[in-house]
Length: 353
Ligand SMILES: [Fe+2]
Image (tube, rainbow, N blue to C red; front, top):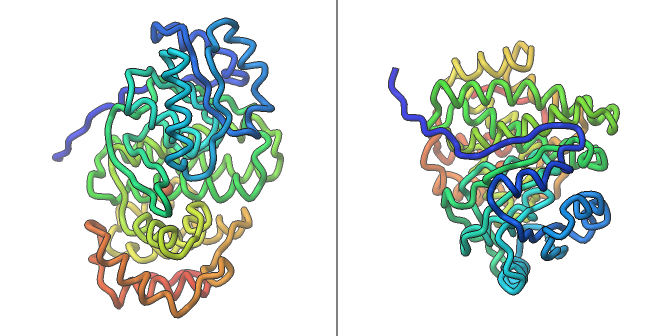
């Protein structure tokens, strides 16, 4: 056995109504001037959290927007500096967490997240913002949240479509971690547990949006998916999703929902041990088929055709994927990736390569 493992320096607090423990978390970090970042929609739902902070709440920035545009992040940073805050608390999903990361990167702010989706971004060193039409990303351990509060009560309003598509992204991060470049026995533990929690939790949350236990499972799986990205990395699946998002305008949750069964089928014969773990975690007889059935059960998009992708753009997407995928268990070549994309375009049951 040969591997390297660095524990992730982050704290997690899980409980129903855990958001009300924010003040404790701020005090543990030695801070007393908090700026909250959130979206305008979220701002209407967090009065109880703001009140629980009392005089500690120095500012609220409620302008978070999808993909964290540069102007939004810089506006928030400006307010943070003007108010002499010492702690940034992002309440929301990936875009809001992006604001917290932008501030944590540029200041000495202590960074806390109250996660309202299972995106997992709070525990990854990857940050990004939208500059013009381009998503610029980087890596720095400074942007990993010092503490994250997971409160299922805050997620009961997430509709079935978002629960499903954001959940498929988290599931994909766990699945890919089982065969990504830096996969190791510890990341496997997180991945297997994440797959099991997400598949059970997403189904339960869609059947009954107020099911606190199912919502907790989704948040738990989301947290683990962030650990998976951090420890193991990504492979062809996420590279395809980035290509589809970058040049073809397909949102990340949607591309994850469609591509995952086919990316797994692509690696099915090359990474048999990872496939065993996926099947065991999901209780299915096929890894790619099990994921395909799961996507159907939770009613997320299942073909590139239904997402409006043009068939004559598959060639260029395949070419770009080959150019930008440095590692994948099954070697990446144009013919094979083009065949994968054709399967994803049509949306039929995946065929192993
Ligand atoms: Fe992702």
